[in-house]
Amino acid sequence: MNILNGNEVAKEIKLRIKAEVEELKNSGKKTPHLAAILVGTDGASMTYVNAKAKDCAEVGFQSSVFHFDANITKEALIQEIIQINNNPEIDGLIVQLPLPKHIPEKEVTETISFKKDVDGFHPMNVGYMFKGLPCYLPATPYGIVQMLEHYKIETSGKHCVVIGRSDIVGKPMGALMLQKNCTVTTCHSKTQNMKEMCLQADIIIAAVGIPEFLKADMVKAGAVVVDVGITRVEDPNSSKGYVLKGDVDYKNVAPKCSWITPVPGGVGPMTRVGLLLNTLQAVQNS
Ligand code: GUN
Image 1 (spheres, rainbow, N blue to C red):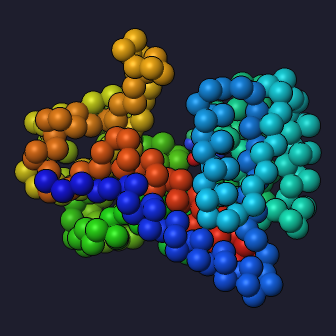
Image 2: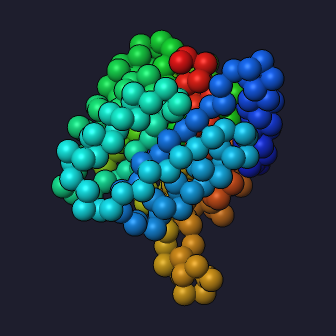
């Protein structure tokens, strides 16, 4: 069994990005600038936004966090987004999700200029992605593809089972694996023969958000397993009060695999790199 080491690959890609930023600076071009909008004080969202700002600093990008009270009106938030759309200093914009219930995600996502939509959530980018045209790819599937390419994992003709059909992971993941010549099956909560489907897979990408969902008896010997899950599970023995659990029963599944991602240190760092790659692209597009 071999480890798909997201930390290592992310480190390498970040060095490449940093060198490109230096080159941009040396040739008098603009420093990439990512803006993040955070609404409210959700702990996980604050952690993610801070991590994204830290990643930007590490590769030499500029970043700005616009932090608004959870009570901000939909109209006020939309105006803030429009201002950032029109600000030539800013190349990429993300609005951290989830948003408070009174703010419809769809309207927010569609207000962000698709040219600055480095999350790849705007329907224009989703459409381009499904057609295999240049666009901003959603960070997690983008990062996973980068990792599979790094380790030269064969995809052509392989059966890839994606578990989960979310707009930001499952659906785009299936589309990208199809572009990499996989035969793709997407399983979800209504799938009736989940175990049989998974047992046919050469590559399994688990993105259900249910801790340790994928068990050893669902995995064919020699399969490649990618674990997208990072659920916080309460644990009084941990200093943080919780531990992070993936969607894969790692201890029992890992010995059967040819390759597997750990949690943490697998998909997480690659997702963060996906956003950086999109932001670098944004400055090159502007
Ligand atoms: N919330 C969970 N994942 C994401 C993401 O990739 N982007 C944004 N904006 N919010 C998220």
